[in-house]
Length: 159
Image 1 (cartoon, rainbow, N blue to C red):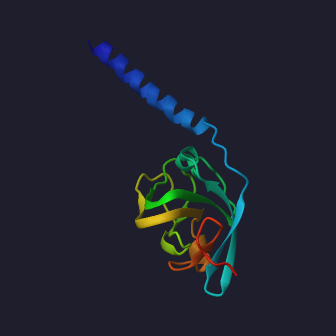
Image 2: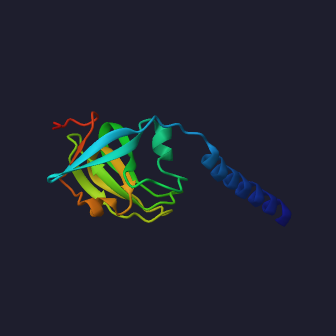
Image 3: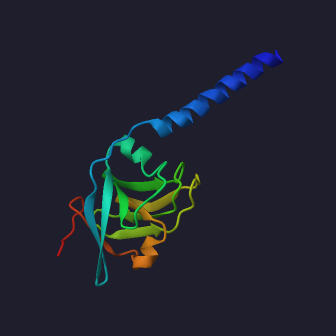
């Protein structure tokens, strides 16, 4: 009987190990990066970002990436505003997670998230999108709540 339970346990453990590896090897395609701007006071910061629009793209996000350029990122676009919750599962890089309202205004920033953590970062209020950039970059550039993200997705007036 003990052998039977051991075999069941090993089968279940193997399944989860294979599932985790398969997720890493699953191909999720993103379109070519697009340019967005963040207006922060008198400064205008430019980022080249990949867009995460589909469920598969949003589920993958920045997982399994080993490097990130300082002016790149990923923009998660939602069909309807929602309370967004992001985590760092399988994410090796520290990120700044920027929660953005439909008018492009930054609601909140979760600074320097801890890689691989399962703790969720929540927008705490409905947002239209989330922008992930290199951890520490928002502070380095002086980007803060109330600043404006300019991209066609948002209802913003650009200069």
